[in-house]
Length: 89
Figure (cartoon, one colour):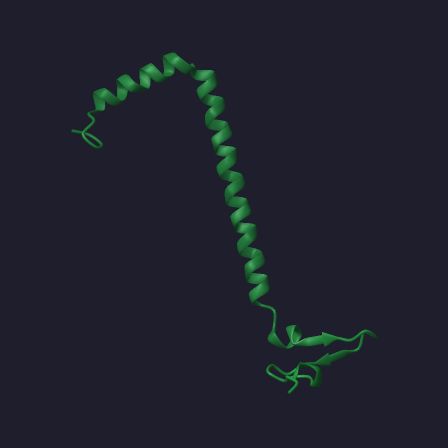
């Protein structure tokens, strides 16, 4: 018995049939295309991880700064409400 109840001889017969149907050139191009797709996926995942790490390394003090219309940086304390944000009764 082999993989999942299929013996090695059955796998070899299936391989021969696939080679006869598609040919070696077509199988080679399919393999190359599949390899390029996997390579592109891995590079996209590593770029995503790098951007996530860069976003996580941003200090909270930098993200808490608020720019006014004149371009002056003013710090905003977390949880502090402006006069405009208070509910009106």
